[in-house]
View 1 (cartoon, helix red, strand yellow):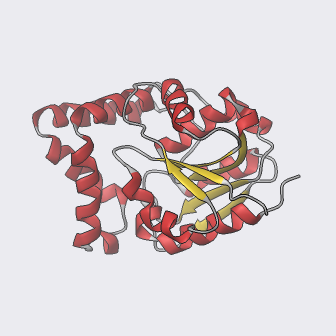
View 2 (tube, rainbow, N blue to C red; view 1 turned 180 degrees about the vertical axis):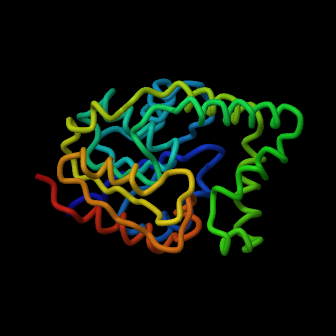
Length: 236
């Protein structure tokens, strides 16, 4: 009998396994799911090594959300033979822009004075207005972030600021690749996800409606459907 594929989930900024809980529950019986801890290092290169060290041996299906997408692309460079499939959710291949870097540094200054205020400041761009009115969802996102804490926030922002431009490497990706974009994502515009889909040979783009940046929490059923189809797609 065939064994289930191993899906290594790679969380975004101030995210942990709770960001993927509903999707993982939906994949039960179809995949062996592992969530990497991306809280320990302050560069994308080191975070990729951390993730690989935590992963089971053998082929991996990588599913990276936001910052986790940067880590997934780095893993594809460091260990291409390990990557059987690749899913990039609400992410992009570009380096940090000067404007984004300046915004991150300002937010780090806020966090140094009042970390919960910095977490709260992120929320309006993370979700649609309708989802911002869901207090359970807002609470879950805040709880994840506050549990990880300011030192993790500092390390992850440092890693994000200094990430490389991955666009020159996209054409070398040869595994089945799923790109998941959200129509109302204010952080990762659809055109950036389309750029990924256009540059990675054979990549498939799924656009989720009524959804912001936190797709795995705002629309978990639609993300699950995209990933289930991705896992069933034939390899060449």
